[in-house]
Amino acid sequence: MANREQFVFSCGILRHFIDGSLGLDRDKSISGFELSKPLLDAAAYNTYIETVSNKTDTLYLRIKQGLTEMAKYSYLDYVARLSSKFDWKNGEFVLAFDYTDEDFYGEVQGLDIYGWTGKDGITGKFKFLTCSIISDEIPQKIPLISIPVQLGHSMSYAVTHCLGLIKPYVGKIILSLFDRGFYSKELMYDLKELKIPYLIFVPKDKFIKAELNGMQDEEKKIIDKEYKLNRDKSCFKFESRLAFLKQIFDGKLEKNLDWVFATNVEDIEIDNIIKIYKKRWRIETSFRVQDEARIKCKSKDMKIRYFLFLFEQILQTQWICFYKDEINFKQFLIEIQKVCKNLVENPKRSYNKRLKA
Image (cartoon, rainbow, N blue to C red; front, side, top):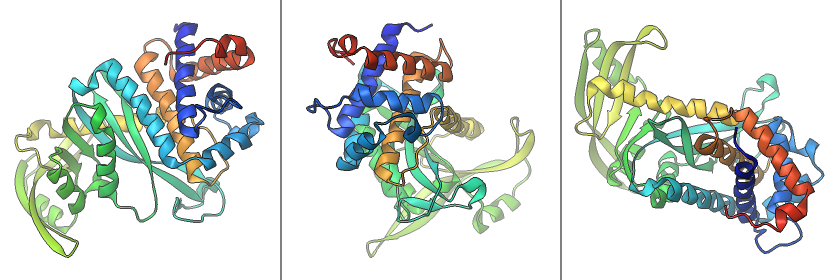
């Protein structure tokens, strides 16, 4: 079982994130420790933060007064600490990109909320793009950065923006994985220009179906396909490789499936390509873990939603990197919530002892 000092250290990490996100470093009227408590109360018990604390209005006001960039770069400061501790700059990494969303209940307005079906009272979704590290040593993915995305955003710009943000903290990117929703000429072209290796699951359009119809079951092949991208009144031509695998048995689903991938990796092994791609499925496990720390919120302000989302991700990465071999995630949340409560209620013990987080 993790000892108390470990949890005190993690509380210090949360304090640093809150202080940086809200500009509390030079403000003595309230501390990140005090605001950590209601956040951890809500995360540990998956409840509304508005119902567990009388400091919610103060928290929301501080978030609204700051810039979205403050939370983003405070999170990246945390990533920099992880990078230094685990020597990520000298490593080789597979990255995975995915969209995730958070439920919204109420009247859908503005560009931050995507309309939804209304099922179970959910009328909208806030969406975030997440870039994560995949490691063979760790079953879960480690989120490097998440950014909010609005209706009508440029997917390719969002991905390349994330790559630019995490570049100082990781070494060589040997592959980036994307699901079918990311298949686009813009993204493939931009990744090629950045010399980022990619593997994208391709949806079955008319051309793809025709190619598959001409293949035998269990046949595999790779072709080079030319694309034309019209951008800024110019036409750019480039090639991407398409790997076709017809009616290959999937052990998890226990049935044969057609698989098609786009890639710019010249020496990719077609026999291993499905196994390589399936690594990105860990991100779904990662999001399910984060759901256990979901802080419910009534606000429709993206700044507030984004701050809470990043706070949840720090909890997730703290557990993955330092606690997962000793306790499960829910136990971690409950224990850190107890320690934080004790630190806040015993200020001499918490504030007079500076944490080197």
